[in-house]
Length: 151
Image (tube, rainbow, N blue to C red):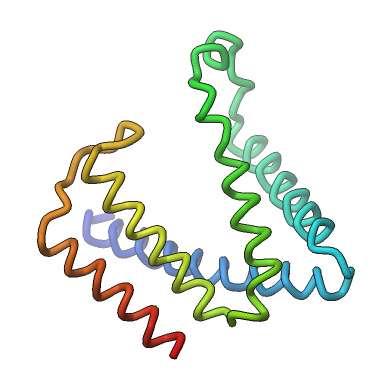
């Protein structure tokens, strides 16, 4: 596969995953309404995700990490699930009041602003990419896009 086709495929499945995030949030928010509990809706979402990850581990034949690898891993690397739970919980509680487009555009704006910051300083081992004028103009346009979507 040519590098162009590989890039196009990667971009297409990333867009599809973005559509999947909208579906995930809508299903979780509706599950909260149906069950009368956001906490249970979130737990059920995580159980489903856990089962999918177990299936992936089995299909990929990934072995259990060694104790050496576990012990040398910085403590904050283990906190990703905490931030994922916040994302799931916010969607469960805010999607119906904000609407899918506003909720997700705000998330994307936060992701992009955070990404510019992480890139600029090379945080968490990311390669450094300066927050130059072009990137900052793009960030302002993104925030403007959120405003247009909301109002």
